Image 1 (cartoon, rainbow, N blue to C red):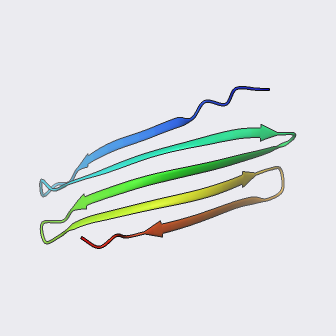
Image 2: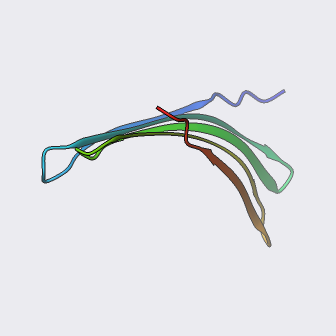
Length: 79
């Protein structure tokens, strides 16, 4: 069996007005024949000055020669 280590994507942003945002996600991708499959989950935070926005998302991916399908869902929890 091939090893497919997970990936980590983490970023921080500072806007011109000094407010900041952050994104962090994890996922896994694997090859099966000529098609790649993936799954991921992300968390986003943004401070706008008026409010703090939190969002989580999950996605499924399928990439091949002819068709790319991306399924994505976002949930914004109440603060």
